[in-house]
Amino acid sequence: MSGMIQSFAVSRMRTLPSVALPGYPQSPLLDHAHAFWLARRRAAEMPSWQAMCIPAFEPLRASSILFTVQRDPLDFRYTEIASRIAAISNADNTGKLMSEIPHQRPPSRVWDHLTTAFDARAPVKGTLPYVGRSRGIGGAYHIVLPLADDGRNVDRLLVCVDLAPSHAPDA
Image (cartoon, rainbow, N blue to C red):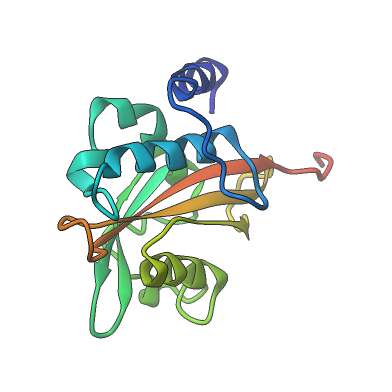
């Protein structure tokens, strides 16, 4: 994130208590996304997209991807890709199914992370290698947040992404 946007996002993150999921990676951005998800679900098992998509979500929006869940067979359709994520991606996958993208279809780690969150109906944190064209990025930390319009049946997955810097020297 640019310095000004990042400091705004971090200052907004301090308004919710930190609710870190155990394990690697720990990131203020991912911790805030998890705390926001918990706060928005209220009495439901999972919040709906409508409950998440409010002005307080804006600091997370630039680092998020929204998937719609397709059933029979299970698949994930890219519904929204944030500007920050789109800027570092190799292609615009909006509207595509994950199964249409060779390195994302099963078996793949990204497919496994989304499937795990879908099956467990609970947040899942993970790391993925970065395969884009931006040399300053070494990997991606993410949290997959299941969403359910009825509070019980997952119909969308919100993925918030925090990019790790590359440790390789610039050539």
